[in-house]
Structures are given as C-alpha cells and as structure tokens.
Image (cartoon, rainbow, N blue to C red):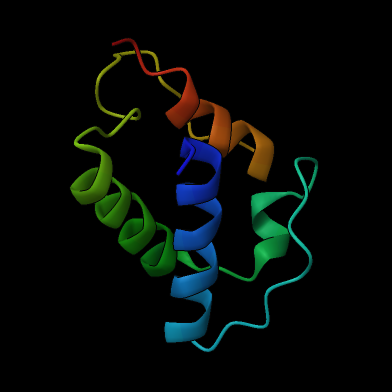
Length: 81
C-alpha cells in the first residue's frame, strides 16, 4: 500500500470513528474543510506514526503543519529514508 493510500485510509477511518462528515478528499482540500478538530488531527498523526514509524512534523525543527490534504500526504511521502 502506498503512503498516500495509508494516509487517506487513516483520514477516512478517523472520520468514521469521530462521526465527521468528510467531504471528498482532494489534494487541494483545505485541512480546515475536512471537519477534523485538533483531537482528530492528533489521533491521525499518532496513528500514522504507529503505522509508518515516523512523525514528519517532529523530525525537523522548521516543519510547519500543512494547509491542504495534498500537503499533508506529501509530508509523509517526503520523509527522508
């Protein structure tokens, strides 16, 4: 399974668990428009760290939280090996 698929699947799973009506996910969808609150994002990042072994937002001192779904996916796709 690709990194993109893992991230999208995790977003969809957490939306179901948190009873969030998730809009259609596209790369240009703002993360604010997903309906996730800070808890849902914290769960998402923790779950992806468990699954991938990395948190791209803590490995760099200048990492900024992404603005769109595409930015979020790319943060995980672009983690140095």
